[in-house]
Structures are given as structure tokens and as C-alpha cells.
Amino acid sequence: MRTYIGRQQAVSVEDFAELALGTPPELWLGVEGETDEERAAREDAARDILADNPEMPDDLVRMAAQVIEENPDLFDVVPLTRPARRRRAEYRVVAA
Image 1 (cartoon, rainbow, N blue to C red):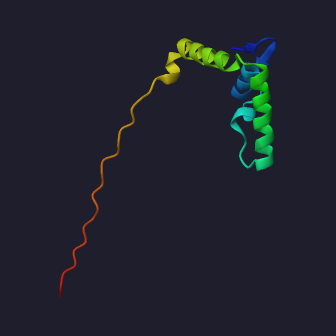
Image 2: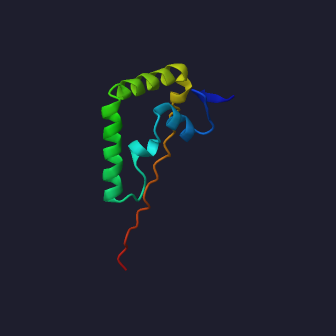
């Protein structure tokens, strides 16, 4: 099944997120190993985008709610069984 956002095909999860947000997710999440200068530039760009698009946070929440409603199986949680506790071996010192 192919997924399109507008006229663009989303091939991967990253594509879908970028097309849905209109920006790459790394803009909001950052990247591992970025410098303080890179982080500051990224945050400035994100602030500018939010200032130009004040409805964006509401749209994202609405989109997330729609995804959850349409795909409830994404949140089917199966409890994991806990492994049985292992008793520590007791070492007793015996006087000789």
C-alpha cells in the first residue's frame, strides 16, 4: 500500500514524518553529536517556523489523535512476564 502526503509519496517512516510536518523531524528532535552552535541555529529555525505557523502545534496534535483513532492496534500492549527471581547463593564460612 502506498502512502501519499499531498502529491509526495512517503516511502519510509522518516518520509511520512517529514511530509506530514512539512519539516524534517531532526529540526525538532536534533541530531546526535550536534554542537552548541548547530543546536542554537536549529532551535532558531524552529522558533521562526512556529512564529510563521502558529496553528502548527494544534495541527500536529490533531494529526496524532487521528492516527491513534485510526490505528488503535499501534498501542496494543502485551505485558511481559517477569523472570523468576534468582536467589543469591549463600556462602557460609565455616571455621576450621
